[in-house]
Image 1: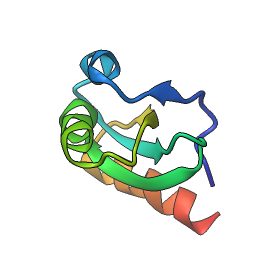
Image 2 (image 1 turned 120 degrees about the vertical axis):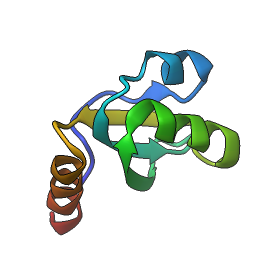
Image 3 (image 1 turned 135 degrees about the vertical axis):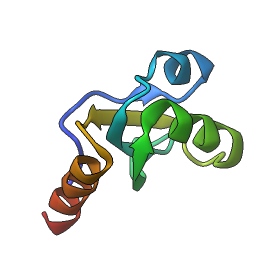
Length: 80
């Protein structure tokens, strides 16, 4: 199930504004269809995505308190 947040363009500005905190992120394509979910330190993860995943052009995220919390958020979204 998708995150209940608005899509943001995946660009340098968005990556720069992403918090340096753990979280769950959802990547989307130009049609705003989900490409994949991931977890980690949001700013670091999104830098990698921007550099290496050209199909991902949109992003939305939810912050977490820890890596374990981010993984639980991911599990909750995968199960739905």
